[in-house]
Each structure stands twice: as C-alpha cells, then as structure tokens.
Image 1 (tube, one colour):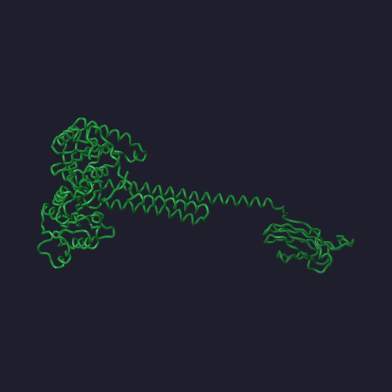
Image 2 (cartoon, helix red, strand yellow; image 1 turned 90 degrees about the vertical axis):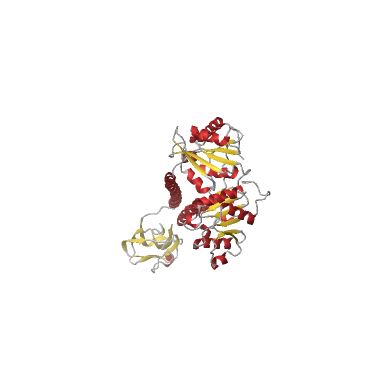
Amino acid sequence: MTTTGSTPRERPVSLKPQPWRWNHPRVLVEHPDEKLGMEIASGLRYAGYAVAICPGPRGHARCPLTGPAGCAPAHDADLVVSSLALGDDSAREILHELRTRYPQTPLLVEVPSDADAELRALLDGCHLLSAPATADQVVLAVQRVAGAPGDGDEAPGA
Amino acid sequence: MRSPFDSEQEAFRFVIVLILALAAIVLAVAFGPAWLAYVVVALVPAGVAVHATRLRMRSLRGLELPVKMAPPHVGGADERRVLIVANDALAEESLLAELGRLAAEPQTHVLLLAPAVISSAARLTGALSGPMEEARARVRTALERVGHERVVGGEITEAPPLEAIEDAFATFTPDEVIVATGWEEGAGGLEPQLAGHVRDRFAVPVRHLVFAPGSEAREPSLDTERRYRDESGELAAKRFGLKALAGAGIVAAVLMSSVALIHSSEKTEARAASRQAAEQIAALPPVARSVALAVHPEFKPGPEGEKHDAFTVTEFSVRAGQPQQLRIDNYDTVPHSITSPGAGVNIVVMPGIHTYTLEVKTPGHYLWFCTFACDEWAMEHTGYMSGYITVS
C-alpha cells in the first residue's frame, strides 16, 4: 500500500527479479492485437488475476517457448489463453509446445469455426472459445476454467 | 543496483568459484611451471568473461521478451490507482495541477515516485546523497503543494527508474502509469525513452507527459515515441559497448598483472639460483689455470731411504669441465703417464718439456697412476708416480 502524507519515504531496492512478481492466479494471454490484448489484460486484472500479455511470434523473431531457453511467464502460469491465428504454423507450434511442456496447465484456445482435422486433434483436451472473442468473453471463459480468484490467495507482492 | 544473479545461491556459487580460480592462479604462479601459470591465468579470466556474458545475455533476453505483465487490480471495482513517475518535471505547474486533479477524483489513489537520477560515476563512487536529496526535496515540495494527504503518497529511490517502477508494481499495483519527462534527456531529468520501456513491460495504460520548462504538458506523437525508441536502442548499445570496453580493460589489466607476477616470480627464482651457484663456487677451493711440474727418475726418497721416481706434483685440483694446462718437464729418457680410468684421463708424458691438457667432466676424487714400467714401488704409492685428481 502507498504511504500517504507529505513526507516521501525511501523505496528499498529489490535484489531479486522474477518473471512473475505476483502470486496466483496467473494468466498468460497470447494475443496478436495489442489493443484487444490490453483490454483483456485490464478485464482479467479487475477480475483478480495477474496477467502477462504476449503478442506471439509476430512480435518476436522466434518464440523462446519453442527454443531451449523456454518462456518463464509460460512456465509459471496457472492458465494460458491462446488467441493466436491458428492458421499460422508458428502459432500451432507454440500450441504444441504448450501442450507438451506444460500438460498440467489449462489451455484456453480461441478457435475459428473452420478448424481443420489436424487442428482439432491438436486441441484435444483444451478449453475452447469461439473466435473472435471479446475481452469480456475471454474473462468469463477464464473464470469458468480457472475459477474466480479465491479469498485464500495471498496479497499481491506478498 | 539489481543483482544479475537469479538467487543468492547462484551469487554464492559465483563467489566460491572466483575464490577457487584466484587460488589456482596463486598456486600455479607459486609452485607450478611457468606454462601452467600462463594457462591458468588465461583460462580464469576467460571463464569469468564467459560467465558474465551469459548473465548479460540472459538479462538482454529478458528485456527483449515482448511480454507485458501486470498484477491483479487491488481494491474495489471503482477504485483506481495511479503511479506518477517524475523527477525534475515535478517543478512544473501543469504536472502539479494534473496531480491535484487526480487526487481530487473519488476512489483514486496516487503514488508519486521520484527515482533519483544518478550518473554511473556517482554510482561507482557511492555519491548518491546529492541526487537523493534533490529528489526528496522535489517530492516533498510537490506533496505540500498538492495536499490530499489521504490519497497521495510519495517515494524516492536510488534504483534505476525502470527497476523502481517494477518494484512499485509489486507493492502499489497501479492501474495506470504516468511518466513525466522533458523532451530530451538532460541533467537531473528522467530519460524520455522511459515511457516506452514502461509500455513494453507492463500491461497497464501508460501516459507519457512531456514538459518544456514553463509550458503545458504534451503527449508526444507516435513519430516522436518511435524516435525515442530508436535512440534508446542506440543508447543501450553504446552503454553496453562502453561497459564491454571497461570489462576488456579490467581483464587485460588482470592478465598483465598476472603475467608480470609470473615474470617477477621467475626472475626471483633465477636470481636466487644464480646467487646460490655463485656462493657454491666461491666456497670451492681455488684452482690454477696452469700448473708446472716435472718428472724425475730416482728423485724422492722413500721411507726405507732409497730414492724413487716421482712427479714433483701429484695432487691436481680442477673444475669440472674446465681444462687445466699442465707444463711437464720429463727429465727421464722414457715416457711416463698420468692415467685415471675413473676420470677418463690418460696423459702420456714424453721426455722433455711439453704442455698437456687435463680436463675432467664429472666432479669427484680420482686416483691416478703411471702405466709405464718404471719404479714399481713408486707406481704403487701416491706422492711418487701416483696421486689424486680432485674435481669440483
């Protein structure tokens, strides 16, 4: 909490950076549209989730998730939302990596109505959401899959 | 300053490895051959450099990740938390007015964060109190001007601005960030590139307010923000280059010091060995470079009173490997010899005056005798036709 009053206090310097600096529940959202991604982030934040927004491989030469380095935000996420365009091979590769590396992490995927058989096979076991979804629809779907953040969760930054 | 290590254990391991590496250098220099010392001295800084580069690359990879993150919203659905990051812009009336406006809005909490602008040189020398005091005074003045003590807080920090904001996200959990800077980076001010960095890293709305002294705040155009981003890349590359240069200088200095240490050690050893050899030589009995002697038949009386054949000198002292000239006058009509199988010497002494060379390679005390048939008793007794060669 902030310190109020006219006397500024001195902020201690953190010595231990972490990808996720907040406790559960943590949601990683992969969304290629920055504006919509920020809307989803805002909705999820106000619903009580810590969020990470990634634009997917379009915003980065190669997704580290598909390389040896891995992706720290994905590693510690409690739920991953994939809104990437699944017609793209790199998006499917990311989906495959998520399924393989983090089989215990629930995966909520925005799926187009014309998904082919290969994609349907890849999505087996995922939670599905019809594409395109609005920010509110994504937030509701996350709450349905992950449950609303409970009172037992620790305070942020604790 | 934030540690490049992920954990205290990692930092501890690094310190232990560094100590062991330095111990290896010292041991190699003190006890090992020179080539081993050179190898260790080359390997240790190389290992440290590789490790530092890996840490740096890991840090850069983290910065390059296009992932924005944000904590959960804290408070009721109608509450709003605004983080304002500013330093020299706190002197601007328009920012203070904006601060006052936000503080007056219901259900709004504001945190004013002023990262002290500290140069690299000041960080190196620990001269942080000046910039910290400036930031403290600015925040205090701003808070006094704005009032609203219940909803506005102020913090100053010595941490770099982006790290301070990251820390504020962990404790204040803002829903919005306002970054107030000048148009260009100046002394005492925050970099205008900061807003772009905050946008890249945090999944909350970020407003960039830019101030020219005495004028209203403006939000930069997309082109200006793009220029800031490009400049930021160049600046980061320049800083990394300077740090790499400084690192290379340090590694070179360490290498040169170590090589000098090894050379000094070698010279000391060589000097000590040379001094020891000189002392040993000085302690040896003196030897002559040339000796004059003669061989006389029936010359030297034996214990029974009869005279026997004899060399006038029968004890020779020489240095190993150094020739000694023997000028021998053989008064006899037949040849004699100085023969020593142990010393590898066989000098045939012809009648008349001749010069011979006596040279022995290996130190020792060697018996010599004459092998030519002459006085049998004298041939078997040292001091007559037999004696010793002492080689030192």
